[in-house]
Amino acid sequence: MTRLRSVLSTEEATVSGLPSRASLVSQADRLQQEINTLEEQRRAIKDTVRSKRRVLGATLAKAVQ
Image (tube, rainbow, N blue to C red):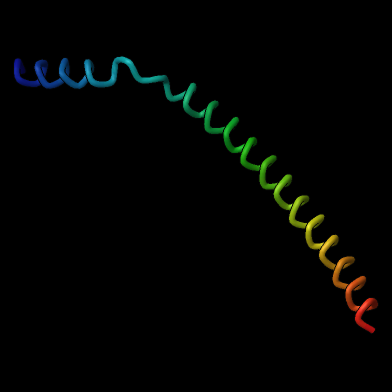
């Protein structure tokens, strides 16, 4: 029993400064929302670049003719 208490007190000291599970879940949710927002922005930029590239390609094709 004494050995168990010793191990337990060592482990408690190891995890004593860590944030709670609820705090970590909340942080993970916020980060996932931020990731989703950034992915939407990246998609919008990609679509804009693709659109501008098409216009430029059509303009160059007409100029070559």
